[in-house]
Structure formats: structure tokens, C-alpha cells
Image (cartoon, rainbow, N blue to C red):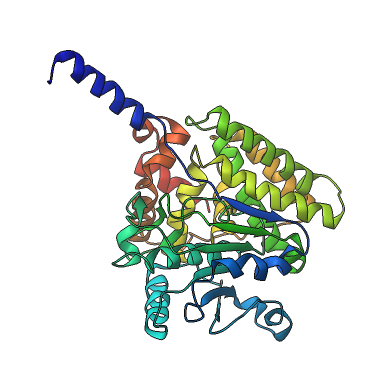
Length: 375
């Protein structure tokens, strides 16, 4: 019977069901220099049949015989080398999915992404779309994926993005830059092998590492902050300071930055990022600027929002002799600014985390354009 008492109970139960988010985490992770050699043993029990390949999506930086000899290929497994020069796109995901479906009689046993954030996000997205109907753009948003992804493994070769641990895969679509945020996005297995980051160029190392640092700043100063996010964010921040401000051995630095990336990604699992990421998405969508340097280009001008974070960022830039490009937005038209502003302001959870529920009265389109004009 629908008595008043029963209805109240239902309302209470419903509230408790939706009040706290039940996020998934990566269930299996292996860490250590040289642990990539164990990938074959990890994949073997996950193989569905000799006709169901593992598909390896690999940064084309590793397109050489020495690397290929280390990849544990069997039967009709395939390695697809992909350039990470551009941000991952929904159309790119759709093309890879169509290519794989056309080539094989069975769905793959799994997808393995080897590279930085671009390759990891592509692997996550491809594994989702292989098991779900439609196009990648249909799933840009929050909790739109209906069926589990195929088994997927992440092997980060550079540290900082947190893509190895996050529940999103950020894609440039025809209308927006937005992640496929879902419970089915996180990897089933991650291999953290610091040896991969030995060959990362210095500026790329810095920009990608700053992605992690900025994750921490935005998470730790946000209105969504809670003890869960804070515990991971504080540890990641401590590690970032050691890596970018202290003089430590290269091997120790690689280990610590890899773990900072992991903790930084976890810090936003139950929280959110903020102004820098929201603005960086606009830069990336319009100008194709990669995420790490995009965050840095924006963050240097955000002292009014993150004074302590920007001061630390400037110290880190000085220590490593990093100079930011200038005049990125100098030649843009009003229409260009309108596009960036609309993309950025569409990321409402990021702005609410940064500025609170009344963020729309604080960050007007005019104020946001003025910030873009500084870059």
C-alpha cells in the first residue's frame, strides 16, 4: 500500500541510492621497471580463442623492430601504430572500430593501449565502441554507455595525464571536446613500467607532468573536495614537488612521477578538475593544441583563482628552463573566441568545482574571453 509512511521510506531509499557515486577503480595493476615483460602472461588467460585477436594500439614513436620483438603477439594479434601528434577524435575511434570489425570474424579478446594519454584514451574508447552500437560522439557525456567494454589494458609510456586510472576517455568530436565518462571506461589492467619514460623529450615530460600537478591544484582547491580526493591529491602534489623542485636521481624521478600520475588521476575520480582544464578544452577544440601544453598555457594566467599553484608552477618552469609559447590567441577572430568560450562554458561540473554553484555569475563569457586573449 502507498501509505505516507511507505512513500517517505521510498524517498529516503532513493536519496541514499543517488547521493553517493559508486565509481569503479582499475581492478589490477602491476608496477615496476621492466614489468612490461609480463604482459604476455597476463593476456594469456584472457584470450577467448585463436580467432579472437588482441589488438595493440601503439604510439608510432615505438614503430621499430626492437619494440615489436617485446610485444607478446600470438595467432592473428595485430599492432596498429598511431600518431599522437593530434588529440584523439571521435571519427578516429569510429574508423578504428570499423577497421577491426571488418578484418576479424570474432570480436577481439581485448584492446591494449601503449602510449601517452592519446593512445590510452583511444584504447578505452575503441574497447567501448566495439561492444556498443552507434558512433563515438553518441557517448560523449556522463553515463551514456549501456554495455561493458571489451577487456582493455593500459600501458602508459609517459606520466602525468592520469588516463591510466580515470573513468573517462577525452575525445574531440564534431561539436565538442568531451569525455566518454562511464563505469565501463576504466582499464581492466594497467602496467606501470617506468622504463618507458626514459626516452620522453624534456618539454613533453614537463608539460605532461604539469597536467598531473594541475589536476592536484584544481582538485585540492575545488568545492567538490572531500577526504577521498584530498588523500590522493595531497600525495600526488607531494610527489610532483619532489620530481619538479628537488634534485633526485632519474630512476627515482621516473618512479615518483608515474605514481604521481596515478594518484592525481584518482584525486579527480571523486572530485573534478577546474578552470585550467575547462579552458584547455576550448583551446584544443579550436586550435588542436595538445592537452598538456594547453593546460600550461592557460594555468600561467590563473593566479586570481590558484595563487599558490601558479607560484609553484612558475618555480618549476624556472628550474627546468621552460618558456611558454606566446601569441597563441593573437590572430583569432571574434567567432573563434565565441567557439572556445562556448566549448569551455559547456563543461559545467568543472566550473562548479572551481567556483561554486553560482559560477555563471562569476565566469561570464566576457571574462573568459579576456583570459583567452592573454594567451
